[in-house]
Amino acid sequence: MRSLVVIGGGPRAAGLLERIAAQSPTLPLAVHIVDPYPPGAGRVWRHAQSPLLRMNSMAEDVTVFTDASFDGLGPIRPGPSLAEWGEVDPTSFPSRQVQSKYLAWFFGHVVKSLPQNISVSVHEAQALKVVGDRVWLDSGESLRADVLVLALGHLDAEPEPEHRKLAEHASEHGLVYVPPLYSADADLSAVAGDVVLRGFGLAFVDLMVLLTEGRGGRYVRSGRLEYVPSGAEPTLYVGSRRGVPYHSKTGYRLQGTRPSLPHFFVADALRGRDLDFRADVWPLMAKEIAWGHYHELFTGHPGLVRMSFVEFATGFASLPWYSEEMRALEALAVPDPADRIDFERLDRPLTGLTFASGEDFQEYLRSYIEADVTRRSDPRHSADLGAFLALLSVYGQMAQVMPHDSWWHGYFSYLASGPPPDRLEELLALSRAGIVRFIGADMWVEAVDGGFLAGSPTTPDVVRANSLIEARLPTHVLSRTADPVLQSLRALGDVSEDDAGLVRVSAEGRLINDSGEEDPTRFAVGPYTTGKAYAAFARPNTNAPAFRQNDVLARAILRTLGD
Image 1 (tube, rainbow, N blue to C red):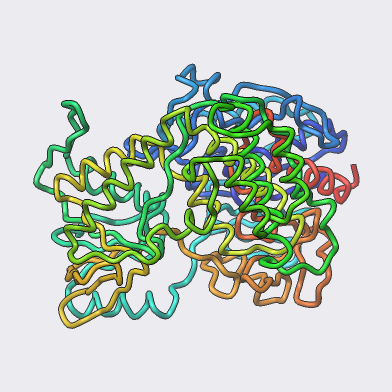
Image 2 (image 1 turned 180 degrees about the vertical axis):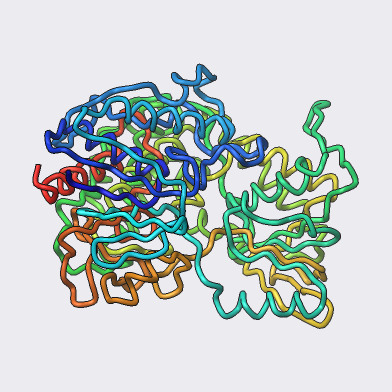
């Protein structure tokens, strides 16, 4: 009997197993899933985390099943979305515990659907090393792998030099320092008093919830949302490079017709060329996202524009995105500047702004956040949803065009992977209650005797705190990986990294070693690899890239096993 070992038992492993089952292989095969966390959900989506933590995707936008939009070679095997399975409001943002149950159910469903010639064994253990065709576990056992798949998910990293110094400073002076890590894993028990949080994305939102509502506070609504403290909360000082939170998710549907995507940014037309991201790729990406924005504006809100969509589209198609002629077309066709898309302003909204005092900035940023929540809740601005759909199209194709670009990934997350709108309402309530204070853009942090200092060019105020929390996931690079399996493979030269530190894999997902050779029997998939663009959950009816990738990987695995 042939043996397939999959290290990592989260959603990716379950999806891969589903694609293997879909091929109806005939060879006798023993599949071993290795993960100390529950299969299907894995570490990030395990049920054992705070019930206050929620997804940042609506229930109707999450599925683990292929549908009619899927154009892979494998057969379509439809099934319920999270909303349908859980019988919840399609536009709600469920808790991560609900998603955990959905993923656990899916894993069980897949195992039951396997033909009798395939067995699945789950090993609740940590894989320690891979040598030859043996995988060694911390339980003391070893597994033979005719084919090995690393489906490791989000990984921890050894501390960067700055983080190591900050941790040493905290230890010497009795302070608290929390390095970058998954929020549900953070030990926040000693966090009290004044706390600086560096990062204003989804990790911050999780930490905000755990340190406020998770400490016994509650929200009440009397006209607007207000926060009632428990008295156990610290004061949270938050800043980042942009100095503003991620944009909230939209709360409406398209008002016009759905744009045909991709339109301008087509991976097949760019693949294989020697490309510079800023000069060659980003202008096409920006034009594609703008196309989604204006398609919805013109087809959904004809009263907000001065010409027909056909006339606008003809001019738009013929012009480079970064040109005076394109700006003139936008100004002529779209009278309100608020209805035009401006990528630079979106990226750095605080550029050029300074405030005489921290209090002035608190008021300004509250107004900014209120305006964002209002805009993302008002169908009059549904052009933002058109841009969002185009963003997803671009994101799904990017990995086919060129290696990972860190700015683009962060920009995408900032625009498209923000929190539910009510989380920003809670942030506003916490700000009004004095629990959260905003630091500003281009935030800096210094370790000084007895504390941490933080500030920003946005205001003259400097914060002194006894705790510093890095409100973001660790940046994983192979040279600093904390994963023992990757460490063991790297020591033997069996795995290599690209310029961004991502594990190099072929188009099929095979590991590429230090000599540039593809491994005949080892594969890797996930956000730590050069196939990183496929890390998000699939949206129904979008021909999700993750499904296509899983399908290709499943076929390559079965060919290697001899089926």
